[in-house]
Length: 432
Ligand code: IMP
Image 1 (spheres, helix red, strand yellow):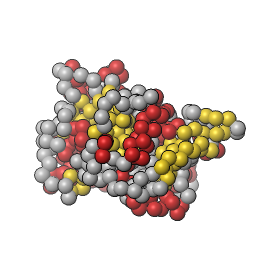
Image 2 (image 1 turned 120 degrees about the horizontal axis):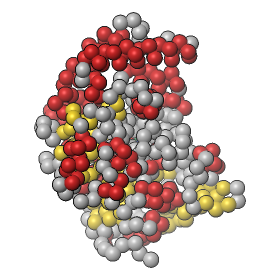
Image 3 (image 1 turned 180 degrees about the vertical axis):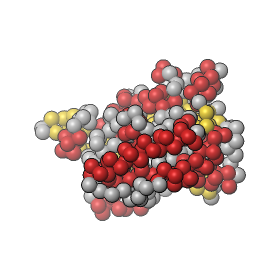
Image 4 (image 1 turned 60 degrees about the vertical axis):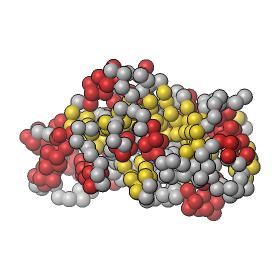
């Protein structure tokens, strides 16, 4: 049974939460493979809205079992808050929610380091300590969840971290936000009870998923953020610190690369970005404001207003190729209603040359000029439509235009935030 990977084709916030929720009905397992509490996956069910930061969106269905893989960085405070919130709303976790003991733990000093390094401002991060935690992971000095489960071992690791943090602050000529005297006791006091509460859910999730995969069960790997926030493929250094692309599902969960044969790429009908970094198709402020309000484009995690722009087909094509996207879900098409003309970026111009792949050098991405194609818009609201044939002709043409550029079928189009606001596409697709 191929593993399904859900991946963002832009800078995150493409609507992955809703798509995972939609696909989760038909799978046995939903597993998060990277990122941390920087993510915010929104699912609207009836009048209830759920924003999930760490727990996979599949938890909102009764059937799938859910996993947080070792590729994720976990803040125990946020995780337990989220678990408590779900249980208060009647969603059961016992026996169906598993957290990898190999996942790295976000602790208060990671947030201190983020501010000390200035990445919160330079990159415009979510300030959740995600970057410094991954930095310690690759620096081979991070704390993994299994170490937190043993009080003596946890204490020894925290003492080592305290000395490390002291040296970092001394080196920068700054004082830590809290005195380090007695800090290990305070950390133990706060965090060890959390470890105890997490204990029933903590396990080695690799054999759990491999056994399920070998039994032929359906696994959905849920990505966070998007392709252009990937540590390698994104607009470095304006990226997050993990592998957000489909390959991360293999390293972050332990599933074999060849099992990732169905890759669902999520693409918004326009583009948004939160934080710093180049954005070739960004709209001027006045137009961006209108679209931001219509689309509710404010961060699910930080509440920050998202930068807004037109759809970038250069990015989309690249995302399809890097991730091996086999099908696309186009989201938020309804937000474009009322737009008399819609622009799409079909290529980049740099120093008199045409480019059809984004440059690796981020300074060059920032200098790229978009090549625009203007297509007619439509007025009718789309929220109540469920069939492709019922969409206005201009909306259908827009979908077909995107599909042609992407080179893979658009399977579903989302036209509203509710679970049912989906248009299934007729087959065959990828028209000539
Ligand atoms: P970090 O992941 O908090 O280190 O932030 C690095 C960059 O990724 C910043 O530009 C953030 O705004 C962005 N980012 C992180 N998580 C998300 C997300 O879930 N959606 C959109 N942008 C994100």
